[in-house]
Amino acid sequence: MKIIPAILTGDVQELDFLLRKIRDSSKFERAQIDFVDGVFANSLTIKPTEVDMVSYLPLKFDAHLMVKGDNVLFWGKNAVQMGFERVIMQVESGESDDYKCLGIDLDTQVELVQKRLKNLELVLLMSVKAGFGDQKFDEGVIGKIRQIGQIREIERYDFKICVDGGIEPEHLPILEKLGVDEVAVGAKRVLEW
Image (tube, rainbow, N blue to C red; front, side, top):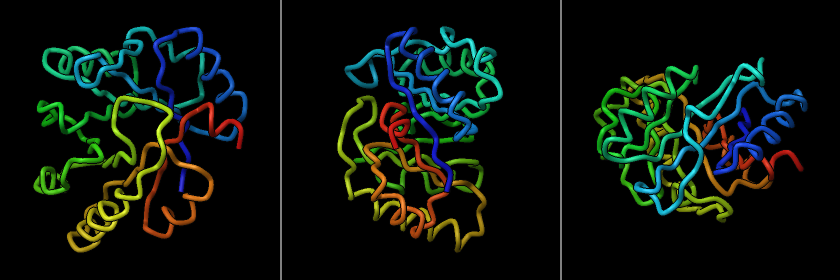
């Protein structure tokens, strides 16, 4: 199971500091940057155009977009143009049909995306409420992990399962046993492990 440091910030200098630490640690091959537009959730972060990824090579990057309305197309296009390898759109945005990587918020039912699973590369299951940092892992996500995992196995789909939010070291063996492929963990937290 891969660990992906995730960064949720409105401060470009903090982003730079954390990305340099992630890159220099040599423990991680990718980083996830969380983008929130202030509409999807009452939180506002930097925008995809504020990330100069060349400075942090050889890291690969995921953009986790928690946006709504006109921001879906605009921020999604910006993330692709800026070189993000994977662009993860929250299904709750209502405009996620063009994306191969989908996020499902803690309170959203798996059935909302079930018909689309065969075309996905990644399903990101939130284990906290999307759009906010410093939350505790909600064990309610475990049922969703099992449900998504069963669908993947029965239908022989090949999407990866990622769990994001509030993850501590003690959760890792449980998540791995459930078949989770990746976990996104707050960068400040995971850099201290």
